[in-house]
Length: 118
Image (tube, rainbow, N blue to C red; front, side, top):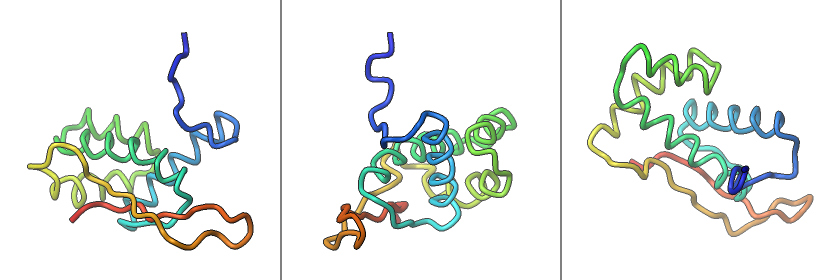
């Protein structure tokens, strides 16, 4: 059964959704904060949280797991060396979503920032 398999479909095909989540996660790790739609931010948040949890313990197996999810060596390296050590003592809740009051010009979609907590 596939009950509750995807919380956010984002109105795209499964392969597009997978690459979209991968690219958004890489951008959050690289830049620390990105501006995107509120729904995409909510969809990528669990992906980034799970990656940070994996990266808190720096082992070869965990690096391979993260590389399998991200498929980007520089992002994985930054995740393990810079991002995860900041959250060594924190039990979850590594990211926050800040909603913006303004909407996107073209389609009036709600926008938000997703970033790591300090």
